[in-house]
Each structure stands twice: as C-alpha cells, then as structure tokens.
Image 1 (cartoon, rainbow, N blue to C red):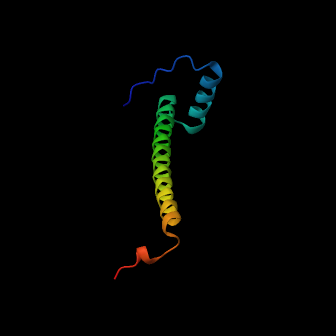
Image 2: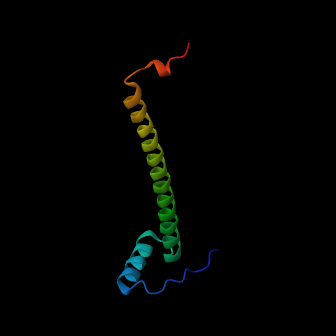
Image 3: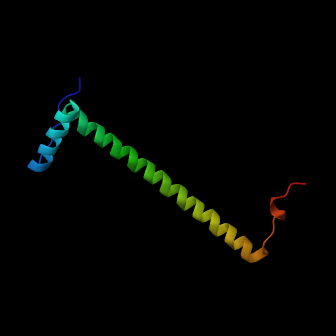
Length: 81
C-alpha cells in the first residue's frame, strides 16, 4: 500500500477541494494527487514530443521550400525508374 503523500503550503482552498474530490470519488487524497501528477507528467511528455515533431516538420518544409525556390515545381524528384 502506498504511503501517504505529504502536501505542504498548498492553501486551505486546495486542501478542501482535494478532500471534497476524495469524498466524491471514494479514493484517498494521496491517490488522487498521484493520479493527477502522473497525468500531468504524461501530458507534458506528449506536448514535448509533439513540439519536437512540429519542429522537425518545419525543418522539412523549409527544405522543400528551398528546393522549390531553386528548382521550381517538379514531381520528377519523386519518380522511380
């Protein structure tokens, strides 16, 4: 069984909201907070991966734009003979 989570300096309003959520869901405050922390970490990881993918795609688009500017439109570079 997990040990209790020690929460300090989060304010009485947040503590009351956590207690209300725990009572409404029938789970412990520690489990709720752990789940929310895990969800936040997962979301942050997904957002970083998405940002990296977008940056990579932008680099590819810049490369395509340079090629188009130098060589004009052409599908020939994609043909296989």
